[in-house]
Length: 344
Image (cartoon, rainbow, N blue to C red; front, side):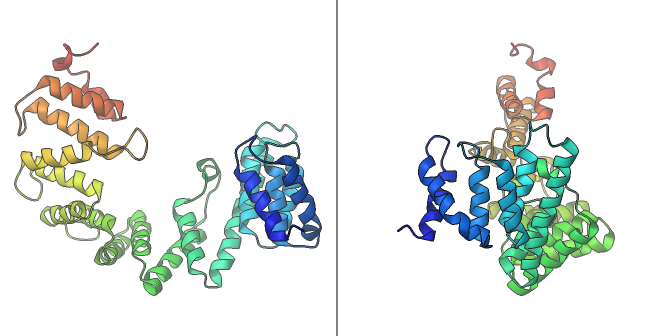
């Protein structure tokens, strides 16, 4: 006799596979087998049935049944069920005219907040992993689809909650990422006191080797936000960030070398850094900001003869490449009259 765990595995495999690759009959049998357990209040069985009925590539798909079982599970504290309901209303009822657009929005809102509240309740019991997850959701929308974020607005209480959670994680768990995120929250407040707190948080994260914090410290010194302006120190921190592998730090350092910010100009070093960035594999899609900026700057250096012989052909090729990678400044620069012989 198939046991409960095996039924769950059958359903998990079924709705994890692409359309046409699952076993309809086997999955239906598993769903029927766990239904009595779900009816008796088993939260996992309820959630699994919700997933089964919401999976739109088989003849048993039934959004109303999916909602019924997800609601049962969510009412018993399943964060996965509440999240699934928010996404179900937002996406799977797209063409369903029996539910108004406002109702879809309201239900999405309702279940998104219920998801957050369930996670908050778990975090309040001391689950550190959940505390980090809920802080990331409340601060940055981590793990939340963009289209859901567009209709969800967090109040000040939630923002305060995120700061409290990051503070706890930073102080009790010695979490560098939490120090950095707390610094970003303070930075966004932009008051003098908040900027000082932000700088202190970035320093704590940097002391723990969090490389993005090096860049933030450099930017604070560069702009004089939370600390006295000091371009020399800004350059030093960009150098630390670049050496630690942060690409944006490397780009900012290259700009310092090119413009003589915080020290002597060094076109050769600037070109070296720009070429290193420009040669990176584009892991985040075609329009990678750092890569396209480096390509654009290389083009400008060839155009203006900065550390290299002026070469209009090279300048055009690099700036065109930057434009193809989504750099707006490069797109505009292609209209330069010097490029008229190369434009098609």
